[in-house]
Each structure stands twice: as C-alpha cells, then as structure tokens.
Length: 58
Image (spheres, rainbow, N blue to C red):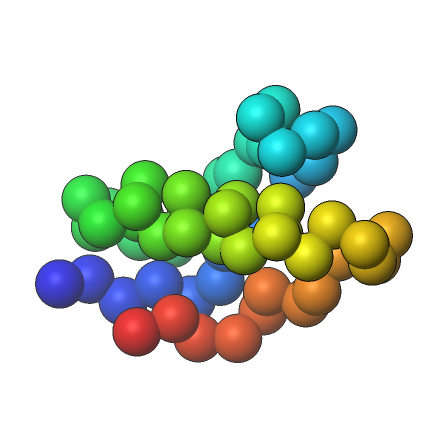
C-alpha cells in the first residue's frame, strides 16, 4: 500500500465528467480512491465550492 499525499481535483464539469489527478502515488488503489471522492462530490453537489482535498489519505 502506497502513501497518498493529496489528490487535487483538476476539473469537475459534471458528475459523469469529473477529472481527477492522482498525485504522488503509484498505488493501484488510487483509481478507486478517485472514484470514491467523485461519488462523494456528486452526492453533495449542492455546494458550489469544492472541499479541500489536501489532507492525507490512508
């Protein structure tokens, strides 16, 4: 399991068109983590501001 420092969102045009960049990780789970963040963002689409994703993800 690799360590992920942060996963910034590059662009979120829509729930189906969310684009993620996985930074500082070669972990194969990064794709699943990106999908998880995408689903969470789609569930709380009411807010126009993106939540900060600079926290460490274990």
